[in-house]
Image (tube, rainbow, N blue to C red):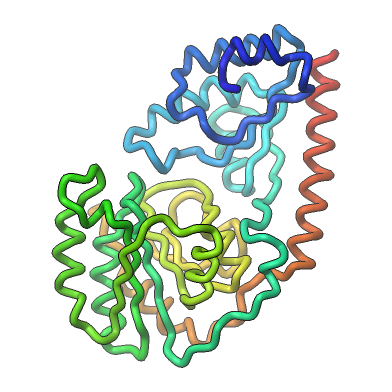
Amino acid sequence: MLNVEWVNDHAHEFDVFHLHFGFDAVPPAELQRIVAALHANGKPLVYTVHDLRNPHQTDPSIQDAALNVLIPAADQLITLTTGAAQEIKRRWGRDATVVPHPHVVPLEVLDRPRPRHTTVTVGLHLKSMRTNMNPLPVLRTLLAEIRDRDMHLLIDVHPDVLTPGMPHHNHEVCDLLDHARDREDVRIHVHDFYTDDQLWDYLMGVDLSVLAYRFGTHSGWLEACYDLGTRVLAPSVGFYHQQHPGVLRFDWDDHGQPDAEQIAAALDGLASSPPWRTTRSERTRQRQDIAREHSRIYHAATAGRSS
């Protein structure tokens, strides 16, 4: 659909073109042509700004160039947090409607009871070492901090990180995990991408999920944790802490090292922290509110384009 020919061929089939993701590989000049085709056909563009900084790109200027096309040209803008809306206003002079991120986990799973276990489990998922991940300094800190606490550290990682010759292979991760394997308070789980159901089971099996992101804007992973009652420790970058009250925080220093005292404080307060979980009824109401707000935005976009 991110194609001028598609827009021209299918313009009679839709009223609003709503963009969220998927334009990473589309050059700004092509985005400009797509926007021009939409407007030439009288079709409004609604853009939900999930990422002010793309988590898959090292160079922020790539995303900036795309946003410099999309945000000024959009008929209506949506974003997920007040902080992101303020940043959009500051950088582009545009108003964005704040519509919170909906549930990620299916509604029928939200009432599922969490499994009981006696030892607090802290989870750090390295995934495939996405560009914005900086897990090694956080992992070293966690390994040091849980040694003196009645806790387990669960480390998950995809096989491509540990397999020589694979694009995401990281020998530092291999070395660190080799040193940690013999510790009784550490479990290492190497596996391919989880299915959705496997991911829900994983998240419900950890008490705290640690996000080791160097940069970013919003997090769907955080939303899944809130759906399932898994506390989140996130860095003070982007707007993760505006997604829900109660997200735990740590800072990065200028050398890419996490604040160990903040991580230690988060671990110490975990056992006594109040429950942190949405309900099925809360997410159902929110989903209805989001649908109504999108309907309002779509009607405003079409009315504005018609006029």
